[in-house]
Image (cartoon, rainbow, N blue to C red; front, side):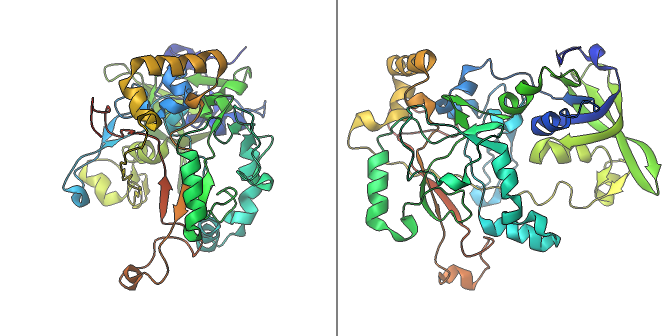
Length: 419
């Protein structure tokens, strides 16, 4: 019996030891144990047939309004003049890793150490978790095979993990001016050898989840290598609609069932696991499933006639995200405006894509930027006299700054002229 990508619900009526909603990484790790049968249930399909998913430079073409995106829209945002914004969330095997911009950022040491302090558990600290960060990744040579000395600190690289990471394999016209400005300004803009070493402040070369000229996501890094295992099945184009309590032990609900459906009008099914159900559906879909399952604040559930299974008031609360603020600029040479030229010149676009298809070379092997700066205001900034700093410590940044060579639209196509 071989692993199947199942599109028909009738094939998935057998019991599983573990049932997962999403979670390619967890599924691959669990199925290493041949005594455990794993069923992954994913609302989306395989996305790698879409060439825009494969080509790193095409990341901005994947959102919003993509078939691999849930295409959510926010409520009116009070701080943005009540604008409603597209809010992307991956709908495919691999989740949002198939449409993000492949930024590979561990975060500052202070974040992890704060987790450890809040939890009272040193195993959440930066030092304790570094072996797991390395276990997750495998640094590969950039596509042009240039010498990466000075671009990424060797000791922080993982060498045997599932996800290929690399630095840019093609030169952008922004490279030299950005590095020159960093050297001229110094200080907070100093050039650093990698921002994944715990202290990210400064300007570093981009590190991305790409290798061999292609995007590396949860699907091709974890699910695909595990597809030959007989104990792993992936049920696609199927939504989990509710978690099902199957028992109670010592007054604690036991949830080992899920309700699933393939469309609104289809008959639903209930699957039951004899071991556990793991919910791994992201920041939006996870609470979206917990709420109708009776896991949230009791008062909120009662208002919608939902019986409380677990009273957890924080479910569906406290979402925080960071805004992206474009600062357009004009290049001295029109040829340096890469993204704008690709959007407006079909011949150039086709030639760039052909180079990628034939040799996995050229700017299409890059993401949107070749450099990232992590910055923070001085501790003496007057704003800190009225509100506490949001960062976890003095070496944790407040702002991520990146340089894109051209007009890269976030909310729609590039206009035919202008900026």
